[in-house]
Image (cartoon, one colour):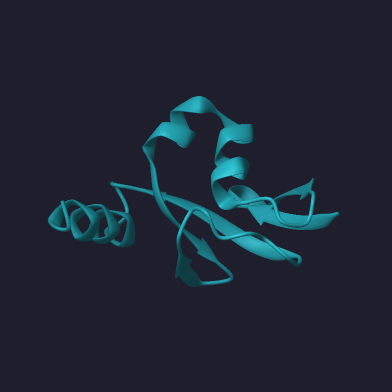
Length: 78
């Protein structure tokens, strides 16, 4: 098990290999549907990135500049 620090200094435990998208889903379907990208220990990552060690995780939506960038970059590829 790994400890994941979330918004508001909430710490939750997850299995090693859990993805940021799995974490978002466990927190609520609204966040799961709105998630664009994540930030793991300050580094912007894909939502499918597996969490392999204790970390700080932010789930970013379109309201966040990095979330907006990821959404627009992905949309431009279509």
